Length: 171
Image (cartoon, rainbow, N blue to C red):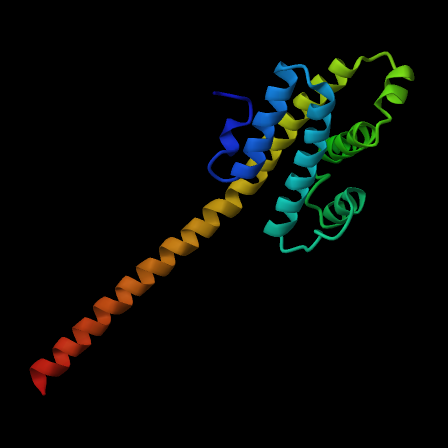
């Protein structure tokens, strides 16, 4: 089945699977579940970003992770700071859903739970697209380094054979 975050499948299969579950829960009208999945996806994206930049934030809460990523200039580079706002939105609404206070949030706003669920979905799509664009260079560089490593090994082996051949021929 095709879904909005299918582009994450090969490089980030765990996040892609969570995005698929989020969309499936919206289709089957499990809105509370989709909101909590959005929160989890936001946390997974933040942790993946930190791993690629060699920052250890796994033992921190999400607010601290966002702050550390912001101080490291990994998020918040855009003019409107939209990535940071999305991370905060996912965390805040996800906390309401996870702790059973979603009714309180709905009472104090003009939105229904379905609206929040769709807002989370749209935010996840934007955030995962931004995340993929931001990290594709790291993936490419890692694969390029791996290719260079194998080329170096093959080249070293050829040189070794050449010298052995030369040595055995002349001595």
